[in-house]
Each structure stands twice: as structure tokens, then as C-alpha cells.
Length: 120
Image 1 (tube, rainbow, N blue to C red):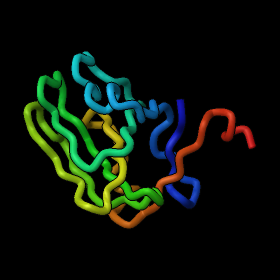
Image 2 (image 1 turned 180 degrees about the vertical axis):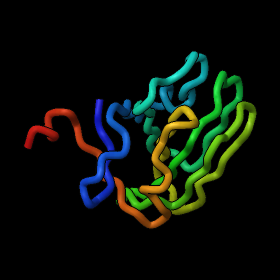
Image 3 (image 1 turned 45 degrees about the vertical axis):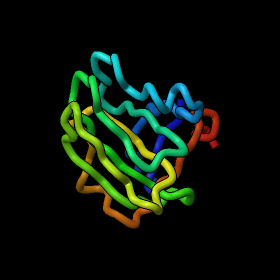
Image 4 (image 1 turned 135 degrees about the horizontal axis):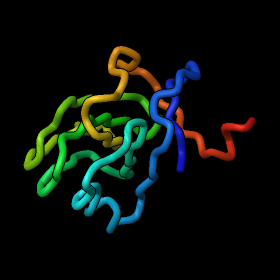
């Protein structure tokens, strides 16, 4: 698991799974009953997502290869598609309702750290 921070060190998401394999990217969160607060899934590379067959709404953050936030989508309901745009390289998906949106805006840089890195 990894954690996600804003570049200035503000913690955003505590437990994130990094999904870079083709099967994980295709499956995403389909079939998941729910995610806990402060959990998410990062899919890379990924410029668009779908929420077909999802059981809950998602909050979505698309980011560039450098970690810059390029698009955000709140409360994306099941059976929708969301395009992150050409600058998007990855996406972070979270269950809707808990993410601190007031602490993030387009252009902010995300930092991804493994649990081992957090002790440094």
C-alpha cells in the first residue's frame, strides 16, 4: 500500500493500492462492495475510466506522469464514463463522500509514498 500527499506534505489518502497491470486496470473496483474511508485505487497508465457495474459512486482524480492534478470528478455514479484528457497519465478512485476536496485543486502536485518511505 501507498499513501498520497500534496507536494507540501499534506496527507490526502492513507491507504492506496497501486494498480498497473492490465487486468487490474480493466477490473478496477468492479465487484467491490465498498471502500473504507481513506482508501483508494490508483490505475496507471489510465486516461479514462468507466463505472459500469459499480455498486457505489466514485470521487476521481486524474493526474499527469509528474503527479499534477489535471481533472477531478466528484460523485461519479455507476454506469458512467469519465475522460481525464490527454495530459492524464493515471487516476485515483475513491468511494464518494469523504475526500477533503477543499485541500486540492487542479494543478496541485501529488506525491505517492510507500509505507516504508513514510518512516523517513
